[in-house]
Image (tube, rainbow, N blue to C red; front, side, top):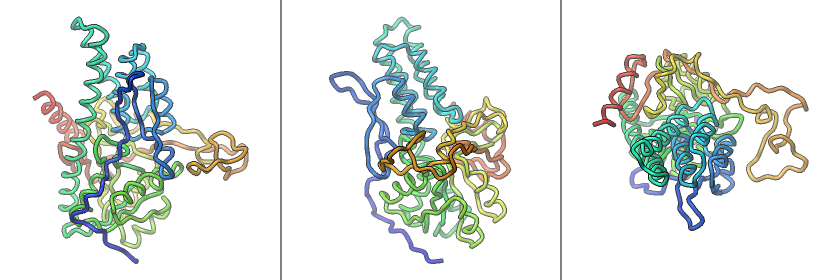
Length: 382
């Protein structure tokens, strides 16, 4: 199969995309988001002045990706506090905006707890709002740092499993700086391999039905100068059969106590293919994505998305006269019912390793995950 090696070495082109930032213009604090529904056609920013606007941005996927949702949730609580809205009401709305990604609720709780603690110590509303904002900013910094450490651990694991370099990595959905305070999760590992000349090819699943791979991962790979090829999700099997995949790298929206991994729908079939073809299947996610309070995959609430995302095709920035529902072009008969889960769940026995900022867990067991989470808490406390 024709191939091409990526340029590597002193490639210093910018790769971090400002997916989220806090600003304080004269008219009052705002949360500014890069609208990911408009990519790759154009880079447009959304300005959120209150929690309801952020909730809508989360539900519409203008802001998305587990780590970034946690950051956004924390900033949303701070935004409500600083602008004098009901913090508990805002926190409840934000935490329930998307049920599967555990980071969202974690970020919300962290800022809310800081706000409550400041009030409990006798602080006034301004001091409590400042505490919530400080918590959000700290979470943002921690996620950026975690991204860098995950890239290091992930690259070391790849080199251990696949000595000699020339890695051909298949990825699903989007896991770069668009979902993170840093350079991402799984994509950050591939980017690290690219920078040291050990990435031969990044295979990018288009990721139906919302095309986060085609629209977003390909966008980030192009910006980073990586050698990448886009494929339809159902073409992955032929790649494995041809021996063209050395490893699968994906992110996660929730990892349960037993090591089950909820990620963008289509991840589980890749795990099955990888196991059959003896290819490592590696999950890259921060410790904040590990939910020790959820026992197993069967206990995860899987978000069900609207059917029109399947029955219609939407092209970014292309107006469609007379379009209904999602504003797209119908590709199925009117009234067609669609099954559209946002995520699927991969059992731990199909996962070669889970890479976190605290290191890689392999084999994936409940005991090993609990130990990594405990290590992370000790580091945070120390």
